[in-house]
Amino acid sequence: MSTEGGSRWWPASAFGAWALAWAALQGASRLGAPAPWPVLLSLATVFALAACHRRPWRRWLVALGWPAALLLQTAAVPAWAWAGVGVGLVLLYPRRHWQDAPLYPTPLGALDDLARHAPLPSGARVLDGGCGAGDGLLALARAYPGTVLEGVEGSRALVWACRWRCRSARVWQGDLWRTDWRPYALVYLFQRPESMPQALAKAQAELAPGAWLVSLDFPLPGMEATQSWAHGRHTVYLYAADRWN
Ligand SMILES: C[S@@+](CC[C@H](N)C(=O)[O-])C[C@H]1O[C@@H](n2cnc3c(N)ncnc32)[C@H](O)[C@@H]1O
Image (cartoon, rainbow, N blue to C red; front, side):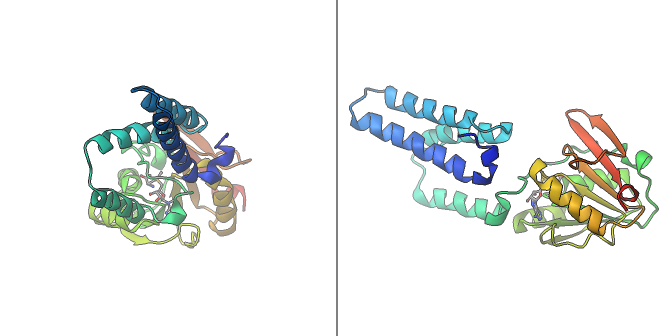
């Protein structure tokens, strides 16, 4: 199972891996395999399936999720606690965003060079599309102190966190792909590679001449960046809307 092609199977591929690990554990125990072989077999199963995921964070999540569940089971975690974790996850990530980018914050200084390459006048409107808990907005606030910062986020819980952390920004719950990008002088994205064709089409349709699209780590497909530069492990890609208007 190559799951990156199969990233559309995410998060089903994670639950499938854990279900198979559970089946291996139960099967080996029922066949009379002595301890610790059932556990070892279930771990081998989940590690092999985790390795099929190309993205490191998914690999780690699948690989560590099963041993964590085994440990919690030995700690006799009550059923209501598991239900609480489930409800918490759904609150944090509504089902339709599970296929989209997960929460992964922009490092605080990652956008410090942005204003040098893409200067904006005071009062310009800047949107963080998928603003998470507000780290991108905090980085944008450092880069562009005089601008009007706005953020749209799919997860209600993250909207609350973001509003609390970024008091001066306007933050609302919504879909970044349904948000009109036309009023913005700059749209910032930290999404995932699979979203970038959609980002390109939307930017081409909606960004005004003179506006900018900035993407952390994931370039627009088939489009040469106006500028790109590294910040630690990250790369900032900057696109001038004039390029395609
Ligand atoms: C990698 S995080 C980036 C968070 C923030 N922009 C930052 O840089 O710190 C991606 C965020 O986008 C949100 N997201 C993904 N798809 C979305 C959509 N279609 N509409 C709104 N938010 C979305 C996720 O919930 C997640 O919080």
